[in-house]
Image (cartoon, rainbow, N blue to C red; front, side, top):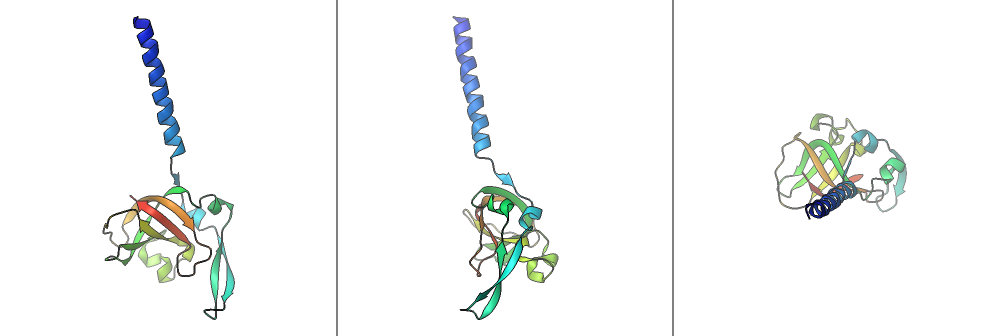
Length: 151
């Protein structure tokens, strides 16, 4: 009787451990480094509607593999509009970020938070998880977008 109970419990423990391992692997986020994100090029495309040339990103295979994936990325917060909960995540602090002319548009990403309004300070270092989206066409949006972002 004891042996049968032990075997049954042993099997249940094995199934539980397998399930935990499988779920952790299948839903794990990929940690993304800025060096991978910034390894892109740009091409000039003329926009007739704006009567000007605009830089469009040319993503490589490394970036395309991340498109639509759950990722974790660290960086510096750049507030755009605190009241509207609009922030940008930057590879560099504000003094060296894209908006100050010291870096390129591939070094920042728009953050769209999952829920709630949390206030961040300029240059606050954070690690966020969300769905990474590549933007190749919308000139009014940043090159990278982190949707459903959370700490």
